Length: 409
Image (cartoon, rainbow, N blue to C red; front, side, top):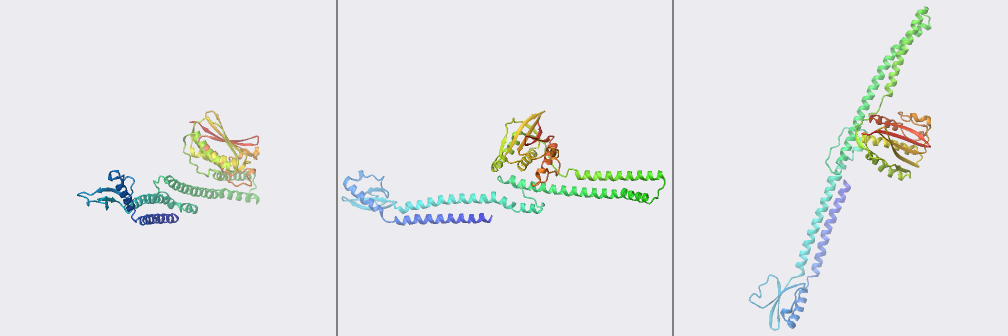
């Protein structure tokens, strides 16, 4: 904003200098013309009258002389400046105007035009400051605060026609991050409570097993039937521990992501355009051939935003793990479903690893040197399931093909 204020001050200064310069230039020109050029015209007209008479005189080409009056009763009554001359024994009055009067009008006109232009420029700059720069001024600290984890202070909504939706989106992002943080904290608390409870429950059967084993090792139970009873008790307690361990494993493998889906209807073209517009430019920069096959437009079931996310994740995987030569999108139909397949050349994943690519945190042998969390395709599967769809992958002729299956509306 400070930079804009400096520019605004510079513009005002330039406008003032233009005003001063224009007026000085016009006044200088006016001073240069303050001689008596009208006398030259009057002298020429006197000669014409002496030769041809007053009736033959044409004043249309005169710049200064505005009228010629022969002596009469109202001879000396004139609203303009005049000069009286004697021609052929008769008096003539030559009315004239000076260049100073003309220049005064010019100066006034130019100042009015410059004033209007100045007001327009200043109004436009004020509008830019208030309507465009001020909203960003309010947001300048938001990214920094979000990076620090400060999610409390809301972003004020604005009806700005340029950035109102942007400001609203930033505040929505802040709220979503805050909600996710709260959900993660609650989930972490629940899991901690569950683990503490199960750990405490395990101690009881574990203590019993230890007591039984010590008794057996010391030969406290010599009766065969008693020994069998103790063995059954140990086995029972071991089953209890196994049950608790299963609960711990289940709690650890439960869905840790909160993926909200708003199912509705959308056009296939809307989904594909969102992908093709972005990746056409991105892939052209890295010289990867990108193609989108022809398709028949139809209405699909699901969440348009989540569907875009699915195709983006698949395409990003194709960029990351392919050889960078070719990526393509193709289409097919099957049992009232629309199949969208994204393929990439240079697949290095083995057939044996293919069934695991949709598991959480799983990364293939071809991803050892690349960055990633192993969640991209896992999220895709979760989203497709929530949209009543499906996703699968296959390898053909060195190409990796990942297909998303959407139900038609």
